[in-house]
Image 1: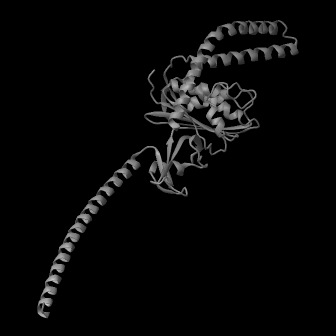
Image 2: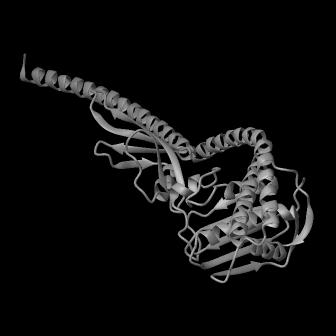
Image 3: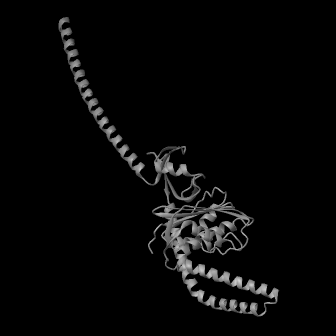
Length: 367
């Protein structure tokens, strides 16, 4: 083969190789374009799925947080952020039910559950934490428990009231007879007076029990807010009231309600405020009303409530005073609920430094 033929053959081989390279390059370019389009679609799908997951996460009422392998939060929803931001005490890091105190001073109940996130080879790469706020469920359960206790209390009170009051009436009657017949004996008169006072106290406890367990229907009438506040304050003191300063702030409105029962409820709250300051102190009674509801608030400068007493003070027979019977607040709550209202205890306390208890009732309740 001549030099010219060899050169011609080489040129043809190079042309053929160039065509092959061009074909392969075209195929690679087409494959790259297809891969790029596929990657774009996958990225769009991934963004869509992530957006959906973010929307689901944001709309969940349950708190959700994603943590990395070191335990740091890398993603959380608003429910989780709001719940943890309101906590003034550390949240438990173990699964199960726990409670904490929020920034308003109220007790919140939550349920926590966490699950580990692992890679394909089983290595832990983080965790997902779910925190469910069960405060309303806990409060509802407490209310149901309270209603069951009230039902049992009603059965007991109705059964024993008649049996107890008969001998009590006899004790009081004979004590009155002895006091009148031996009126010249001062020591005996003092003893019989103590007996009669004790009988009346027991009878008052029975009456409170019956009111809590089997409340009577409302007797509705119109009255002024200031009038009922002053009447209640006057009845709250059993003796000398000079050691206490009672401030009454009542708006100039008239409402409709059971005046006697509401006066009794206010009287109990004011008496509790006085008893919380045995050496004397300050009590403030505030009453306001609008077209929908009337609100009564009693504040004192006593020791106030702690978290455990706030949770239990509505229970019958629970008291922090040795001489108390623990029926004051349950009776108030019974009267308020009978009107269709609500009793509220401010866990933060009052501006006076002690307890702050209020209740509201409809301005015009339906009997």
